Every structure is written in C-alpha cells, then in structure tokens.
Length: 356
Image (cartoon, rainbow, N blue to C red; front, top):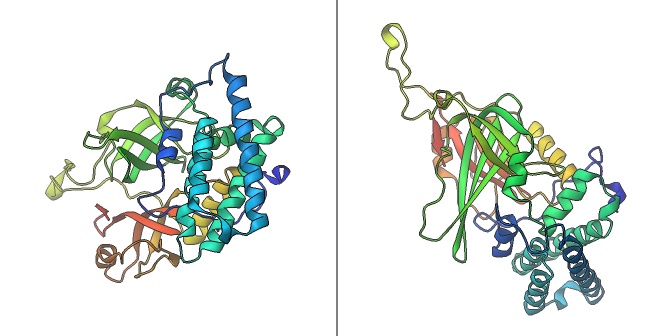
C-alpha cells in the first residue's frame, strides 16, 4: 500500500472531512501548534518518542482490525474516546485527533461510507509510520506531521523562503474548547502556490489580524516540510506599499480619475476542472489533505453549487454570494473539503473583495 504513494499516481478526491467550524479538533490543534517542541522530539529523546508512537499505532492497527471484523455498527463512542486518550499518551496527537473524529462520522446520515473511509485513512497513516524509513523524505515528513511530530518555528524559518505577491483569499476562525484557531488562505500571484497561515489564541484574546482579506502582500513565506507543502509562516514582509487592501486605499491617478477607489488585482482563477486538478495533485502528495484553497473564475453560484461543484452540506444557502452574482459569473475564493466547497470571498464587478 505504501509503495503506491507517488506524485504521479492517480488519487480520488472523495474523502472525509469535518464540517465548517470543526476542521481542527482539540487534539488536532495541539498537533498543529506552532513554535513548541514536543516531548521526546530532541536528539536524545527522538528514539524513545518514536518507540512510544510505534507502540500506540500498533495498538491502533489491532483495534482497527477488530472493528472491521466485528462490523462498524458494533463500535462505541466510549471505545474511540479511550483509544484517542491512549494515542495522546503515546505522543501521537494527530492520530488521536483523527480517532476523535470517528464519532462525528458515525452521527452522519451517510455514516457507513464516511466511517469506513476514515478508518481506511487511519490504517494508511499507521502503515506509513511503520514503513517510515522506506518512504521518500518528503512523504516521510508528511507522515510524521500527520502523526503529530512537531516542527519548530525556528526550523521552518531557517529553511528556504518563497517570495511572491500573495493574495489573501480569506480566513476562518474555529473554536475548540478554550482555544481559537485562525486559518488564513493565501495564493501566490506569480508562483500559483497555495499557503495556509495558522494562528492560535485563548478564547477572548485577540488573534493575529495582520493578514487582511483582499490584500496583496509582498512577502517571503517559509513552508513547513512535506510532500504537499501548504502550511507556512510569514518570514519577511517587503515593501508595504505593494500591499493593497482594495477597500480603503486610494490610487492617485492623473486626469479626471484622480482619487478613484481601486482594488488589489483580482486573484488569478481557473475552471472547476483546473481547480480539481490542483486538489488531486495535493492529495497525491498528502492523502490526508482535508482542505485546500481554490480560486474559481467565471463561477456561477446556486443554492447548492459553485461553478458546478457541490457546496458543503453543512452550509446554509449562500444568499449573499447569489445576490452579489446577480445571475452573472464572478471570481470566488473557496476552501475545498472532501464534502464540498466553503466559499470565503468573492470579487464584484469593480474588483472589490467581498467577504462571504
């Protein structure tokens, strides 16, 4: 199974993801936390950490085999919670987060399909860690990240950075227990690279708001390692005059148009088929990818679709987007999830960014 993972291998985009507002569980937030160093991640503790993770994942594989043998309907939420706690103790918080999501999959109307798919992804991750030393470096790093090994902020910033004019496509805040996670999606205008900047804060405390939706930011981003790099840190901001919000900035022009309000350039978009091709490429590198930013050009929204692609079933009817469209196609930034799209931002006829 592991040998079939290659960037050229075909992958389906039919996967399982949490609904909007629940993409990162509390364990997942812990796994994604930036700047901290997990216990046992240092040179002296690395071998011990890996042994604990391997023991925890071996228990997981035995449990998964039992679930398939007994039947999915026989599984209980208390079993999943107990196993998730055991995996946290084994220092595999990313896997614990995935196990914690089984209860949500079980409560869905299409629970047999979703639960089986999620169990399959858990098995794939456990098998990947078992064969970690045989995987290509980038794929091995992806497996480590998904399991819950942390990469320090300092290590990421010490690596190569990608300079571009980055469109800030949109953001979404999610609350988990007493922690709020902010996800900000970016797209490189020249490189076409997607990026995700995460920040965290306790409930009631301010989050980083330095990345404004609709802005065009001249910056260098340092990406976390992996086969489909997505999460990034803003390493360096360059000339601030190149950042255009598109809402408040006045362009000084010559002639009668002087003082006209203008927007940042609309981000480059593509068709639905091009967008799905990018998602497929991301999944080829990281099969556990559960979200990806897309920009759809000439996209016509309806009550349940965008550019012919289904919206996430957990969303309300996007009346704001439909009204903005007025029956005409427009450019829309959306977050892809395996269950459907989550619209983030649209650009009107004047090229102004409208947060959805």
